[in-house]
Length: 322
Image (cartoon, rainbow, N blue to C red; front, side, top):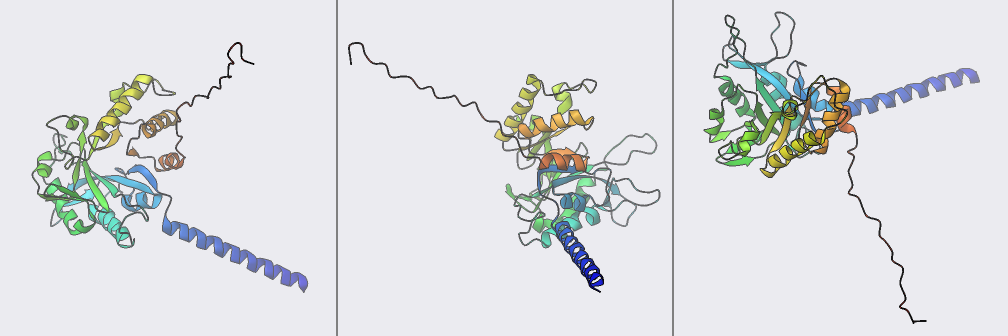
């Protein structure tokens, strides 16, 4: 009898433990992963819920690809993620804007990530369909107009440019790639999107910060990196070029993201990520969600300046003194 009671008690204790662990796991799932400052998930090929996936994983932003869908009653934007044959990709509104708006509404601070004041970075790349006859890729000219119509209902949670002033919001939309018209943004009195500029915009005559608050450039090509030669660490000249670019952009009040960062092999990728972090690059982007998250969770190694050891001099007595 005692043995049976002991067995029952042990089973109940096991169930209670499982229940406690399940509750902890559920609470962690609701809270999401730790915040990954500066981390951008590149989701051009998927998943079909890129915004929710990036936010749950703790990333500070996400990059998605869109293209015009003219087969609907009113033109809309669909994601460029891979889909089964015959199945349309989700729309930009339902897969990106609506989930982010839901997260903001559920956060008492009105942000995508709890206890984080900085806006969530939403980068949008236009990828038009190639011409079926020539194969040439040309924007339709309606990409920005369609995007603007989708953004306006969410204006209250978006960083907004209004009459020369930038009003921060929970989400900052930045357009990236070659298929957006700069003229559309330059001529707008009020808009809810910005451009990713080039380093040439730091020079006189370039796009102002209110239009292009972020600049980018292909990094590997600029540094002369050859994929056939692995770098165990950055050469001194490459490190100098990288840090000079970052300093110049920051001095002009802009954030920095570099494209063309090698994704493989892993050794080379980690070398580049370490140098980007050490140079204080604002955004580190990757399609590899797990490796980037693990890298960003590592503590930052601070470099300390050499501190000279104080030298103590013996007091010398003058001759003739006792």
